[in-house]
Structures are given as structure tokens and as C-alpha cells.
Image: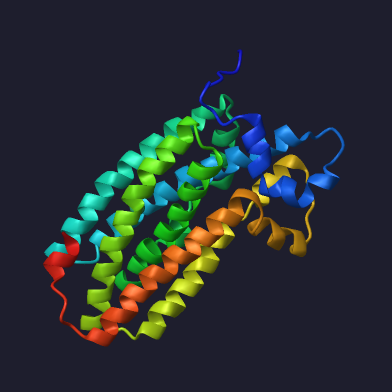
Length: 266
Ligand SMILES: [Fe+2]
Ligand SMILES: [Fe+2]
């Protein structure tokens, strides 16, 4: 069957220009592998990851709801759950933008992230959801909307980015209230965020992409890839978002319990 080509798919030029792999190991590709193939597979890999993280984020909201009877939290989780469900569906259809089944093949090979991400207390899950995952999501969407400007995916990313920023703002506010009222030390929140970031980076690491392309990499190259091409833009945005969310929690812990929970969740 003729592959379906979306005229709004990112151009080969933009895929090549934004590729973290090509920027790092492009000079020593295995024989027979051309730059466009590498950049297209890389794009398919992160498109698959976007869908998988959206799906895990949606499941995490269900898991958090099961851990509380607090109406303010339940209402906020419900609103976000509805939006995450639309993200899951939107990115599932976006996987076909490539016109091949490569992204779906990555989805099957990577499997789900739920088992790794959904564990721990409500505070731990809220840190993972609102501080770590939303920051990663914002980084990926902001990076892609900029580097693939004009493509259908960039438009979807720009729209979803606004919603993820709202999720983080509301979630960090709720977490701040819980931390200041519940007596969780801020250093525990920082430790959960640091460990969660390592876990998520491990899940995002492009092992399956390297295996698929037959590219062997050194530790130094894998580290370099994280700050190259579109991944470099993503990392900077993610760091900024994460430190903003942590600052909100830190500020609340200093101010005590004077927050209005209902105002924070609205
Ligand atoms: Fe989302
Ligand atoms: Fe979100």
C-alpha cells in the first residue's frame, strides 16, 4: 500500500535540522543509513513516547483520585483527567502523521510507562504528575512547536502546551497546600522530584531507537544527545518549568497554611 503522506508533516529538512542523533553521531552513521531515515525514526520515536506519557499521565490521575476523598483535589484531578484523555486521543491520531507505522511499532516495543510511574503516596504521585511529568511534557511540546513550526503536529503541541502549563500551575498550587498543611518537608519533595526525573529520563532514553537504527553509542554520546537538537531545547524548557513548580511549593512552605485551597484549585 502506498504510504499515506500528510502534507502538513514536518519537512525532511526540519526533521534533519532538529535531530539530536544527527547532531551527535551523524558523522558516523552505519553504511546504508541516510540522515533523513535517522531523523524520521527519531521523530517517530518521540511521537510514540508522547502518546505513551500522555496515557501514563491520564492513568496517574485515576490513581491519585483513588487515594483521596478531598473534594477540591478530586475536582481538580477530574478536570485534568478529561483534558489528558483528549491529549491521548489527539496524539494517537498524530502518530499517523508520519504516514508509516514506525511510531506505532515503537509504541508496541516500548510498552507502557504506567507500571514504573504509578506508585507511592499521594504526595509522591502529585510530585511526579505535576512537577516532573508536566515539566517534561511542556519541554517536549514547546521544543516541537518551535522546531517543526508550520506542521500539524506543531499546532497540536502548541495547543496542548497551554493546557499542560495550566495543569502544572493548578497542580503545584495544590501540592504546595498539601505540603504546608501536611508537614511534608520541602527537602522530601525535592528528593522525590530528583528521583522521579531520573526515572522519567530513563523511560525517555532512546534505547529502542538506537537498536532500531543499529547505532552503537558511548555513554558520552548518549549524554551529548540529551542536549543536542530538539532535545536540547526540551531540556532547557523542562528545567525552567520544574524549578518554577518547585519554587511554588517552597514559597508555600515558608508562608505556612494561609492558602485558600478552593482558590488554588479553580
Ligand atoms: Fe497531557
Ligand atoms: Fe497535563
